[in-house]
Image (tube, rainbow, N blue to C red; front, side, top):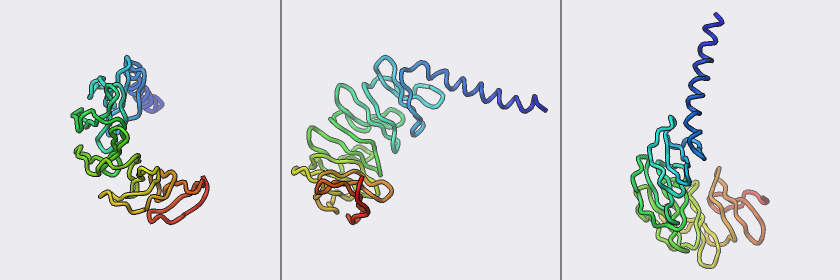
Amino acid sequence: MKKLLLYPVIVMLTVEAAAQKWTKEYEFVNEVFCGLSLVEKNGKQGYVNKDGKVIIPLTFDEGMNFSEDRAAVRKEGKWGFIDTAGKEITKIQYTEVYSFSEGKAVVAVGESFGFIDTAGALVIPMRFSNARSFGSGLAPVCNNNFQWGFIDPKGKLVISYQYAFADRFRDGMAKVMKSGKWMYIDSTGKLVKEGD
């Protein structure tokens, strides 16, 4: 009876040890997102599956975790996006990017920010001086006067430019700063609570 109980424990420990063995080949191994884990070796990054098999070669200077089956990758100071097979979704051309959220990703060229869709098409023009990811159907964007407001997925301003800073919506609330005070608003712009 005791032998039967020990066998599953031994198998589990053997599998766990084998799973951890391949991670020692890399200087950095991140969690698995969308079936792939970001790894680094000799200053280059790429992606492996949960068994340690290289799926996307380590050719990038930097990479982000996959989100919505897309990952941002950097080469020679510029960013682009790839899919889980390593296929280029956008050219490596952006100076700044955020991961995909709600079907869109923030991208920037120089000081101009806009949004692309998962096919890599620019769907909200680069007319903002800063932007953050979508959450609860809204994204914080900053105008040329350094005021923040929120747009909908079509790029329409739905909460006016009035904040010194605005973060993305999480759990139905967004953290904003107005008149030197931190507060949280709902998706209509109504104050939910004050304070950090």
